[in-house]
Amino acid sequence: MDTQARRLAALVVVALGSLPACRGTRSEDPPVHLQQNMDFQERGDPQEFNGFFADGRVMRKPPEGTVAVGLLKDDDHLYRGRNLDGTLADALPPSIKLDDKLLTRGETRYNIYCAPCHGQVGRGDGPVTRRGGGMQPPPANLHLARLRPEPLGYFYNVISNGKGKMRSYKAQIPVEDRWAISAWVRTLQVSHDAKPGDVPAAAPAPGGNAGAPKGATP
Image 1 (cartoon, rainbow, N blue to C red):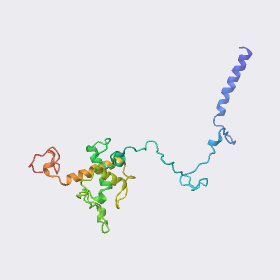
Image 2 (cartoon, rainbow, N blue to C red):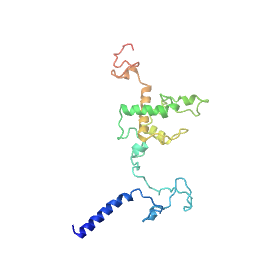
Image 3 (cartoon, helix red, strand yellow):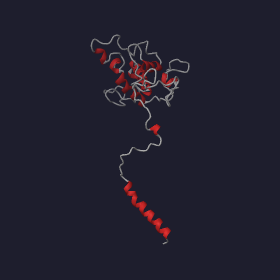
Image 4 (cartoon, rainbow, N blue to C red):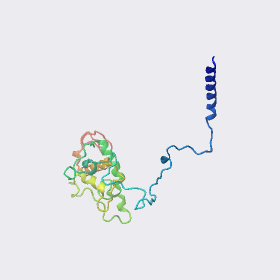
């Protein structure tokens, strides 16, 4: 092996031998910041005061017309319960399918958010009305003659924006669940005047006698 090759081999050995010594080495010197403006930039926490702005608030109001990505909500039927001409829609939005799953969801959400005031069947006699002398004015009876003809979008709109003493529930109830509740309200209204003959023969009879023939004793 010539002199140059031996020198190169020695350098490689020294370099490899020094690698373990670099691991875990501590230094009291501050780290080197090649780009300091990202390490020491000014920042503010929510609700914090900031004297740079005239109103002193660190949280800035978005420019007028700004819409967050994915929150355009340009479907008036789905998000506002209205047709293109501004009238209240009397049908579910095309993106929401009317099936047993939707009605089951509507029933459970109705029982959570609506039944305490409106009652489990919608007569306006929920448990809240029986406490401390009741509510004045009392919650609406959903079976009143003036409410039965209202379009489906009416109930969605009331849930979303409130009416009278009832406050908006849009913060608590997602859009799809508001439509599910509206569909369940309509189900309660339709079933209010239902007769035994309106129940299909294959439907479960009261007491659990599914498919029981007419005239059979439960």
